Structures are given as C-alpha cells and as structure tokens.
Length: 233
Image 1 (cartoon, rainbow, N blue to C red):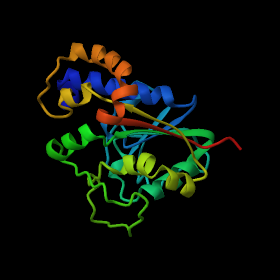
Image 2: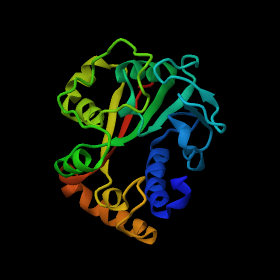
Image 3: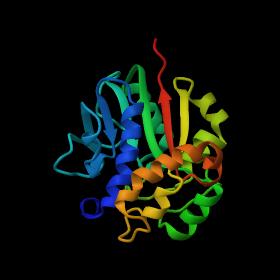
C-alpha cells in the first residue's frame, strides 16, 4: 500500500488529518469514507465507516443514508469524500440529522484556484467541472461507481455559491473555510510513486505555507478545510 511505502505522503496527510482533528469538538466522531484507515491515529473516539468493506471499519454504509440515530455524534469528519458523493445535499441533511446540537461537520477537500485548476485538469484523473450544479439531486444510480467524482463541488458549494448554501441549509453555520496545501501537496506527487520533495522537508514547507497562505492561498492553494456547525439548541 502506497501509504506505507511513501513517507512524504504520510507526512502530507498527517498534517491534513491533524487539521481535521483539531477542528473537531470533543466527543465521538463519525468518519465518512474511512477505508484508508488512518484518521483513528489522529482523533479519539472515531466510528469509521465506508461504502466499501474493509476489515478495520466499524460500519459499511452509504453516507447518503446513515444507519445512526438522530443526534448520535459530536462530529462528522471526512477526507476527500464530499466531491465523490452522488447527491451531496442528501448527505448534508443526513450529517445534520446525526449531529448533536453544537456538533461539527469537518471535511478536507480539493480547492479549485487558478493554479490548482490547471494542475488538477491536466495531471489528475478526477474531473473538474465548474459548470456543475452542486445542489442538484439526481435519481440514485445503482450502477454508479463510488469513485466517480467532480473535484469542483466543494469549491462551488462553499465558496462560489456560498449564499445559496446558507439559504438552503439554515441548520448549518458555515464556521470556516480554510485554504491549505499550497506547496507540499503538488510537490509530493500525492498517491503517485514520484515526489519532488523528501519526506523530511514536509514539516518545513508546511510552516512556510502557513505564512504564505493569507496572501497566496486564493491563487494557488490545492486544499480547503471546511467546518460546518450545527448551532446549539
């Protein structure tokens, strides 16, 4: 598995997972798309789920129809899952349902900026369709591949069409959208075998990124940390 064979990838994603864990409220977290099996290393009390079976999962289920009671979790967390969902708005209603008052939905997703758009379009297998309607709810397709994706969906919903999101989901507060992944993400090569930086450089690059992000983030960030919060009753 490339996660174990590529130290620079572990360094990059460890930073992402820590950002997610730091954004979560204390309590129990429902992880969506936990097939990689890594988030439990960074956050306590995680119930890990995925639509595809893996021996380390706590539950196999569809994120758009969660088998949990209302108000079961303090957090719902997901890494690189939202842009794969067939009906993201259906999932958002499910996440809101299973969250406790004051709970958070935390997701780390691709961000489409002028620089990242070029790289994602020409060097990444998943499409970027900026003309898509992120609020569209198609009829479920039982033949759909769960790995189908549109990397533009998070950017469209939480940045380009933020006003519509707020209107359509008054049960959520858009607590924060934080840009990240300016340099280390593209230079690492991601899940490909190659990398332009050594693993030992990741922590230094991440520190440099934190300084540059306020200025260069809108131009060249590759990732976004989205934090939605269900207000306390």
